[in-house]
Image (cartoon, rainbow, N blue to C red; front, side, top):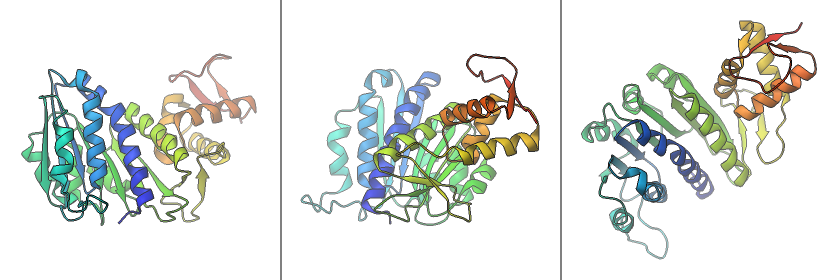
Length: 304
């Protein structure tokens, strides 16, 4: 089970990513589904409150919120001990627009495929936040892809990159998280088909990471090297990765280099721009244009 500090970190990350995802989903579709599976009760509450703050955008559309939870695991351990999850969510549900439907389902996160199917989410944007105590399963990941419309924010004990790609998420970002109070905070992975969502989750990871003094690393790095999020990050590993990508694949547009860094490193898109600018100033790289802001379609080439 995650520690309290890890749980708080994950909850804040969920809220930030949903803040980006929900308006975009409602802009392109009249239906959207949010699934919270295996997380603590506070995360379910936070997701509902976030939906409530977007009431104006929700009106005239249909939003379904699925909460998969073990009732015993989500019992209130504090002064309100004995309060069950329906009672905790009830006051928030009362504030939601009529267009929002909440389904509280008993069971662990592995029942996500059943919940998504029962909710009739097929064909519409689906955002799933899943906290798994064990390994991912192909069935769960296939449900989270929802054809081509799903995005998944996943907390797990080890790398899930290969499984996410195999399930149909072409864009995968993941980090091993190290919190001061929780040395083994697990891995946060994200699967999507959207470059904008990929950039958004990286920005969210760094924003929340700064609040919690997190260090991030590559779950597949045997050295366990981590990057400090609070202070100015060490850009040397990113520069080495970008140079290696150019040596392996030849000249590349800036957009492709950003995408590669977002999926293969712990860095943000803004860090990629900075690293490219530093390498260009050092004469290691060449660009199409002599000056001005680096455009996404501009080609970057090794100078030597």
